Length: 158
Image (cartoon, rainbow, N blue to C red):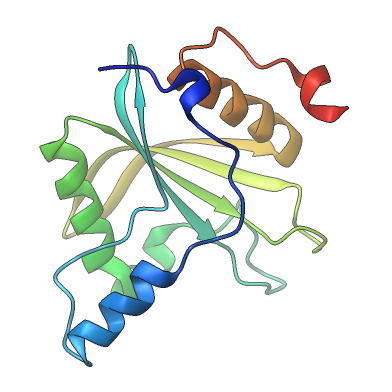
């Protein structure tokens, strides 16, 4: 698989036009598709799928305590479809719980590396981390996918 390297560009603004077009074309019909938050190719690990799960702001629920099993009844179809896509691509699926920046629990990130999804729920290895540590890991992984050996954090902060 060719590396993107310098051909890639930083993320700018979100592009919801494809989503809006899909909604228009389906005209209220149920969808047979799912949206991936992020799909990338790693030269050693293969395809990696990220699904970012925004944690609702409630006193008894934080990114570290929330889990798909808490709302399985609402989103099981989404998680089953993500898992089917993961298996079809021989990919790795990460579910990442986070809270909006500037909120009480913004520093809590839960990374779930999924090992199975069935009608009974999600099975995953979980790692509680901080926003800063997740950012370093995520940027390093992104750099590896671009064919770089690591992120020059100083260059990006100037």
